[in-house]
Length: 250
Length: 322
Ligand SMILES: Nc1ncnc2c1ncn2[C@@H]1O[C@H](COP(=O)(O)OP(=O)(O)OP(=O)(O)O)[C@@H](O)[C@H]1O
Ligand SMILES: [Mg+2]
Image (tube, rainbow over all chains, first blue to last red; front, side):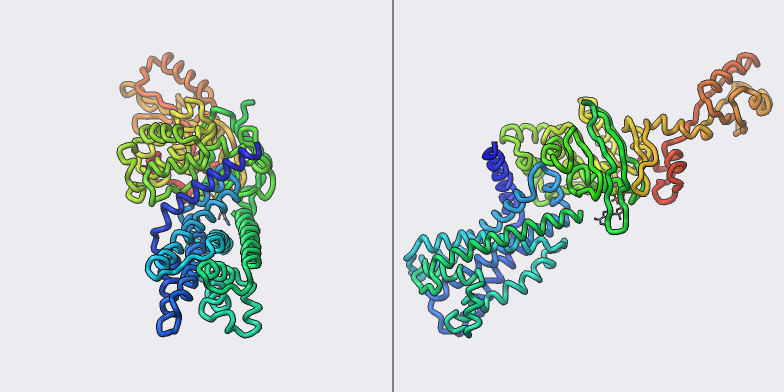
């Protein structure tokens, strides 16, 4: 009986995620924040620098994954509030958690789909070699979930425009790029920066992807996975709490 | 068990504002129950609490026997819901909207597809099923919304202002559909600020104002409750001189005014007064040409109970058309 209920919830969550994919993936907001933004930031970073392709690909993969996965919640939820379609979820015989899981799934798939592109380019064009498929796959899957949940948590900020959520979220996302080994390698950060970098989930995404593509890994896979799992749990927990608190105000 | 909705002290506060103030009412299964009130009266807030979008500050309700706070999923399974705006997915087609709704209610594939087809045909949208809803007119979106509400074969339908902003024909189509569904056993809870709509559609009406229910009864009983407004209008064949003073002598007639060739008789007891007027004409050898009872409209009742008439009252020429 319990199992039946869980399967039902998963079916409905999947339907919600699939609908989001259909509706929002090609929207300007998703394209700008999910693709254009990380790619152009990446380009402005490598231009005129001595960065090898081997160094650059993992950073690009992690960065696109980071932006793409975390953008779907902040785009879909405010728009659904504005069109009042979010109310359909509240009045359907499902729990709010099912809805949030569905939306997380959408961000997850979006992030994976987009970050696979630079991997393919790396492998097919620049002869990157996947040395640790487990690290790469786990890194992608876990990070996509983690950042999708982060986006969802931010999407609890009340508002009917993606901007109201994107702005505050970028105050967190962009500084994270500096302490996670995107712009500055972690080994070159000052000591306090290195300490901070342990607490940034993005650090561990880059580490796992790097490891997968044959680069060096400073913190080790176990810590990487542990921290990503921890953040995934935290973001989901807080996200659900915040969204439930929102409903009380309806 | 024949109670479809039972609200007990249902209350919603927004800060200091009491949007819905300890209301109690019952809706019977099979009824079309109207919630009539001016803008800001608390109609939508009440509906939103009943359908689980908003959580009551105080009190509760049972819908189809399930408590909306403790058994909300069970209750929601039996509800069809049309909120005050047509919240359809504009980037999806009509067909996709219905199918997604079906999935949200976890209806098996073959069943949701046959149901969607059936509803598109019923609501006259079948030809347009593969068009994006973006290009749909207000009336089409409203119909699609109602179709979506019926996907899960609900036993109770909530309609928040189903015809507001629609033209006469679209409104008529919707009202007739709702009546048809009701005759097949669907219980309907409908809010409106349109008196004529409430009058034509509803078995019983609750009049709500400032978050409080002022009266609940059938439209006819509500009207006859304000008896002093009841009028009989009569005219006779041929010119018989001024009959005002003689008509005034009729039992149960409280006042008479002459209006062209017609007389308006005020009464508190229409049936008795009618029969007396009949007797009067017989006795005097007069032939009745026309005889009408002008009962108060629901609008009169509304004004009487709420004491407000401006903005919410549509101009006379448009009555029943918006
Ligand atoms: N989310 C909210 N926050 C604060 N106040 C609200 C909220 N929703 C409704 N109200 C207030 O509650 C009162 C009742 O509103 P409600 O929408 O229920 O009225 P209504 O009868 O549906 O009116 P209308 O005919 O305009 O739809 C209004 O004063 C409204 O301003
Ligand atoms: Mg309303």
